[in-house]
Length: 335
Image (cartoon, rainbow, N blue to C red; front, top):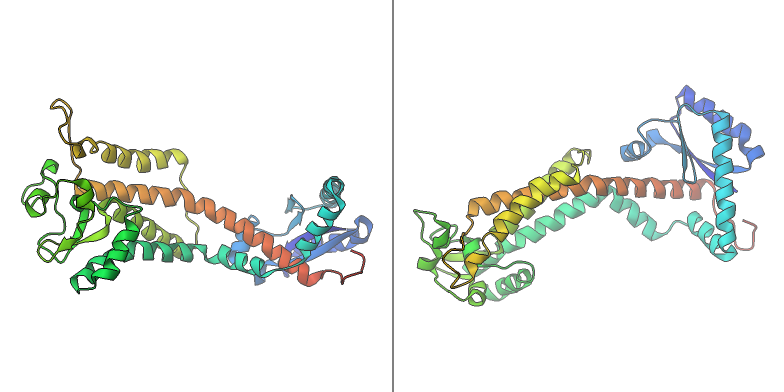
């Protein structure tokens, strides 16, 4: 039997007319109706079906207002033909699939919860990820070197942690740039720390004089703070911010960070030819390019994820309603 989902609101004359039409055709076309009252559901569900009712979903086919008898007949017929073709693939596989469609599992309820709360999960994870690196210097300052070293070691797998490209807490300055960056009026890295070997420099976490470095570099801090900031705004706006096209992500997000990051690579290599232009970025440029990359990335991705989550929410809601209104037959009963 074909399963048909009818989205409606009780006081709508259009919905009442379509409901009466469905009742009239139900026996003749042999379909099962699952009715979902949109007025009692999350606004995300209304948005996922196009923002207006009545709406009829028959398999992959969706009918929207205005809906007439011919459309219903065609959609049910097409869904039945599709069902027959899929049934030919394998009797047991088809029956298993039908049974799964009638059985609501704990995984379904978790997916339903996640589809509504994923942005809060993302924001929490990013908050923890960008927050722990600031805990490391706090622990170092208070003498808890062992837990601090665990944080530094964990983030060493994802970040270079070079001290001349990191923020410092509890010291003379918030940063110690290399002389190559050309920043005046500050103590340089060479003056304050001066470790030439890059591998040894990575392992320098600080001291009471210069302070203790944050376990993420300046650029990474900017990336994840921008992602967190957009995520909070995205949640406050009800996840209704329109996404940006991919080329804007490339132009505004990828190009600036790529140019600023790669152009300073030669500056790390000793004894480079004099004719080769060497440069070292600044905390300001790392912060700006990192923030642009983080912002553009989530601005591009989050609306896409939202659409997927809306589809998931819609699908599982239909499954739960169908299971409650048309429970699966007991074992041994015909399906």
